[in-house]
Length: 410
Image 1 (tube, one colour):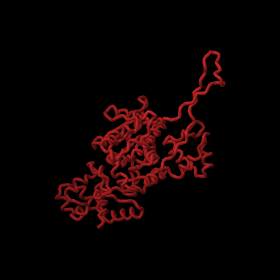
Image 2: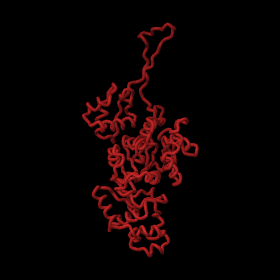
Image 3: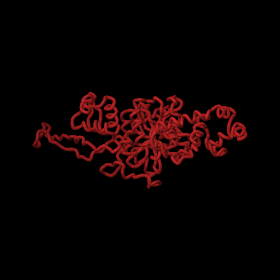
Image 4: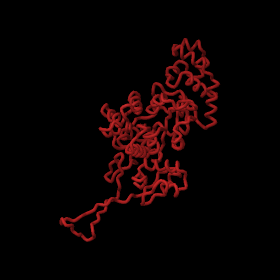
């Protein structure tokens, strides 16, 4: 018998933060709860009068409709009694009764998962940091968890995919909601390289109050949470606080002490969060405890063998020294003038996770700068697709934007 509708019914009746563990300790299963009826609900002492009224008013037929809708759209309805339900999430006190899943939650099995969160209006530097960090985490076989929003979230998911790894987006609305349609292509990519999940029924709109509630799932799915660029009132601080309450690790990337955009992240460090300067700072302890789940040797390193610092690319090419006017000609000062020329950018290989459109856009780049309209003509792709591809390449540190809206290899 399909028990999923009973879990959906329970969640619909009591809301997304009901203490499922306390209810199941008495009734054993949601079907047993449904069959018990109002008298047993009252005698159990588990429910308030208002909750009993909601249980009575909520129809199982509506739950059946939701399950059918998910089946039609190939969305999984994952419940706490399923082998697909993440064990780490079951450890929090208010775990969801239902997870609606677009993708495959098996990506979390026997893997170390790390949440990476931050502001939606992130600086270019923070986007670069998030992309590089998550690409390195993915290369080391960690799963990146984030919220699917703009800014740091998008950079985190994109970096993980470019790193050839898995990523999970936790939404604060239903899977069928018209949410951030500019990010719809990224969500599809996430579903193909991990999963997009929500505890809200598919037609739930993106209501503001839902997003702080879902943050407990982002932290609950993760061994640790990394905060990048968070102001004093950033929602990312809610995720960090929940992580600490759940007994999980909290990390933060130090930022400009003068800018208010980094006040929250810097304060986390003051309050005990671990500052990080590379992906190795996040994974080093986990690699010792769970060596079978991580390959920390795959993190990019400098020529000296140290992990590459966040936000900086170490080129293996040595700077070339050229002498002015050829043969050691002296200037009027009598000193030899040496001009230090930076190495030409080397075109790097794309990771396996890059889609065809990104590869097509990246193939346009050689030595000279290109404007967006030039790339569009070369690729014969729609403007929106080219812009999205350029954003992903920039986040992953493969290209950079110069003045005059020109992109060059980085």
